[in-house]
Image (cartoon, rainbow, N blue to C red; front, side, top):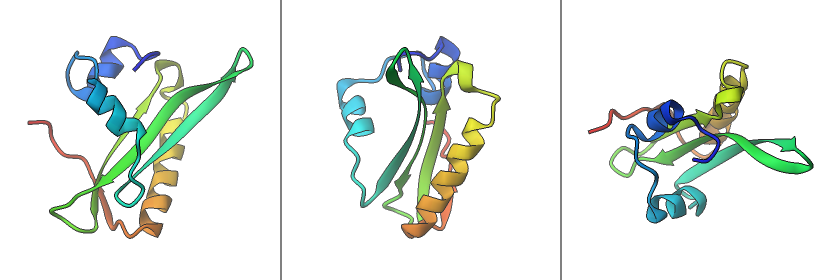
Length: 107
């Protein structure tokens, strides 16, 4: 969550907490049978820097549905990158049998 402002980090996790090691492991160790993450990067001082991610996770209880989320670094919000990531995620999800992307309310 480095590079995100406190409000952006809060919106992604729906709390002010930092992700646990287990959550970080789950976010980065992708099971491609049930989930997908698309990363947007840009070069910064000769190195590649992540500026956004869109991901889905297929729902076990509801075949064909997948929960999704998109997060962008603050400097990249409002510039169309989220829309591009969403379109790419929709295309990839459809090709993998996902019929509907959903957002689940936090408990």
